[in-house]
Length: 329
Image 1 (cartoon, rainbow, N blue to C red):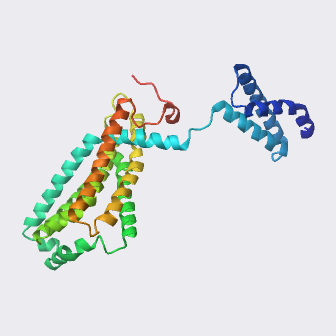
Image 2: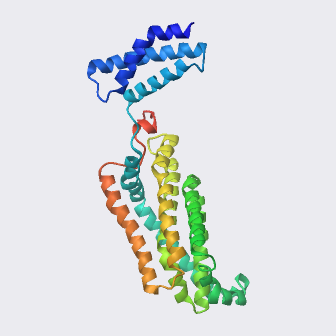
Image 3: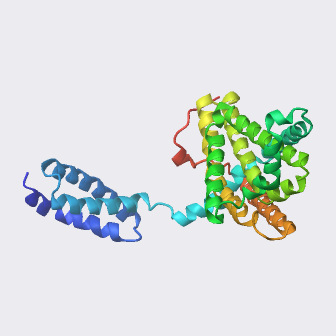
């Protein structure tokens, strides 16, 4: 096939396609014409590429076809619009759906932490768990120095990445039903034993003053992540009338956004732990800052989340992005 002769014959059609694709608005007849010319030009492009893949004619025609395709299918959603919908609808409704399970997990965590602290405080052989010299050093300077032995910025980045990684594990491996519970047990026991040692050494005030400013939000984020993981686990254990795979996929799509949201939440918590907790601010002010961060999270969840929930949103992808579904009884 002579490409130059082929292009000369069909150039008027391609030029017309280019003109229609460049217009902002088309009437019904012009839209039909655009679709017809688009289909014909696509066939022409295939014929040209079969003869010469890198032909300049093919490149020019491909650009015209791409512009026509964008006119037919519409441009993608603006990225800022998508971000706005994510932070005002998708994310808060995901948090909102987990609100009661988050509270239950938090209460269980506190109960286990208190039990571990009381056990450590009254354990007759506490020396076997931690020698007395180590307990004294821990209570007198190690516990407090932990928050200030590194530069504030690097410490904040370290705790942020570590906590975000833990939260991601809770959600991603929540399908097992074991991982979130194991993380909660280990953390509750660790915090409880630390509190028991501080109480045994008469430094309980230091424990609360250095835990509360960042711990209020940090631990709540872990509770939310664990709640998301357990909800994903429950979706395939009790799928209802849906197939297990479909139920699991749907719940995972709805709650995987929690990982992204908690990354932002834990970043704020990391800033508090890195810059507020070890600072010389009055203790009441540091605790107030931590409480305000927690209050902002719950206000965001309950106000925007409830609004999105009442609007019928679930945090799932739209029907086009989620794909097709099997019919169920």
